[in-house]
Amino acid sequence: MTVEESELNQTMWRRIRRVKKWLRPLPRRTNIHSYPILRFFAEAARKRTYIWSFRVENAVPAIYAGSILTLMPLYGIQIPSAFLLALLLRANLPILVGLQVVSNPLTILPIWFADYQIGQMILSVIGLRVDPLNREEVRLLLDNLAATFSVTSLAAIVMGIFFGLIASFTYRIVANRTAASYALLRHKITLHKLKTQSLLYKECPTND
Image 1 (spheres, helix red, strand yellow):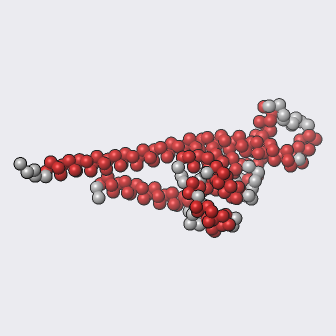
Image 2: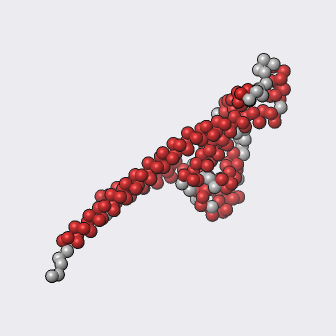
Image 3: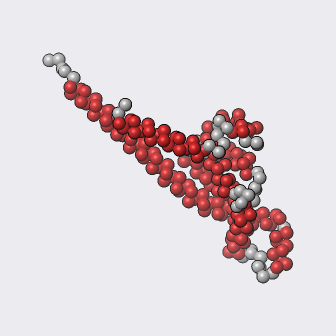
């Protein structure tokens, strides 16, 4: 094995080990049956290769959908929701589920509060905000769960798209750099093989 081939193999295995470490707590083909709800769909999930793919066309939809879902007031049903979105959008399931870690028992109330406040700001831009000085109207709006859910969801969608845009752009950069590094190593290996073959051809005795 040449130095370049050894370098390529080491790089590939190093990255594979790193990805496996990151994915250890997330649903994968080998452990999806251990998730309370997802286990009922484990067999069907294993057959759908696209929900396990980290290609850009599968990862980017997962980033956007996961960013929105984690900010939505849907705590408790996020994992099954992530699975359904992965199927509908042909998106990466581990990324979708991994982003749900953002909303947890410690962060969920601040996230919902921020959602509601930002949702009110968005509504005010289009002239639909309730007057904050009118406490009676504010109280009635907070008591109306449907209205509160709508305002919170609106902000979750807007913020999710914003964060998804940043995350997907970062993912594309990392994916392109990774692909470029592999391509460079393969190019080096190809050149080395061609050079070796050329030297062997020159050294090979010819019959007159």
